[in-house]
Structure formats: structure tokens, C-alpha cells
Length: 181
Image (cartoon, rainbow, N blue to C red; front, side, top):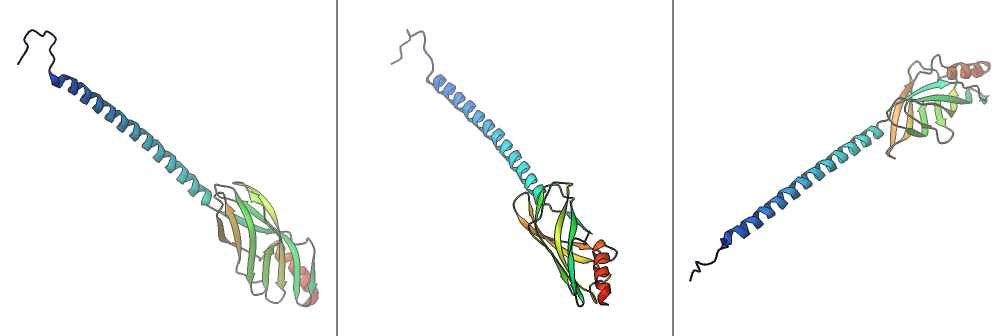
């Protein structure tokens, strides 16, 4: 039976259509908010990853300087204390943990943990030098190995060639080797 006297008759579909539209608006809003938050998270992750990669880069320059900080000589060999100038040419601070070089006639090693170098920073590192007078002074560079901790707390081994010929180390060692020649 249909009551024709009812004046405010609304179709049953109108209420459900409004609810469907409200649900659709809420779903679209949730999608937009999720997309914005996801985009921000990806941007933060990308920035974090770029900083990690930057902190992992290690670049050092090493130059032998004074070796006349004391030493001793025995028949055919010389032991000296010297300094190695380190320059951080990388983009992040690094801490030098250990320095070592070895080839026939030459041994170089750090005497303790080295300095922390800011980007562009220069520091001196105390090293022990051992030379066998007869074979130590070869023209090829000495490859010095560094154990370095980067800003991301990773320890990396890197090498750097150092020319002994013409250096203070060679001059000071040769002067101590001369009496034994």
C-alpha cells in the first residue's frame, strides 16, 4: 500500500547515496594523506641514505715530515720517531685508528691511535720508523695503509703512496746510516 498523503517522502536511495559519497570522500582523503606521508618518508630515507654515503667516503693525503724526534742506530739499521702529516680531503670527519707500511728495508707504524680529522683538517701523527740502511731507500713510493673510522662508525682500510726519496725521513735516516756505511 502506498500512502499518497505523505508530504515529505524521500526515496530510500537518497540516504545511502549521501553515505556512499561521505565514505568515498573519506577514502580519497585517507589516500591523499597516505601518499603525502609516504612521500615525506621516502624523502627522509633518501636524505638519510645520501648522508650515510657521504659519511662513508674516506680520502686522506699523507706527507712524511720530521724524523729527528729521537732514534738509534745499530749496525746497518736505524730506528727513528717521526711525524706524518695527515690531511682529510673527504667530506666527513674521520678518525685514524692505525697506520702501517712495510716493504723490504722499511717498516712504519703508528705509536697509538691517531687523530680525528674534520673535513679539510690537518693533523700530525707520531710514527715509528725502521730502516735497513743498505736497502731502504728505493725510488718507488712506500704504500702506507691506514685503518680509518668514518662518520658512519665503519672501519675502512685505505692505502696512500708516500715518496721517501727526498723526504725528511730519508734525509734523517741517511744521516744516521752514514757512520755505518
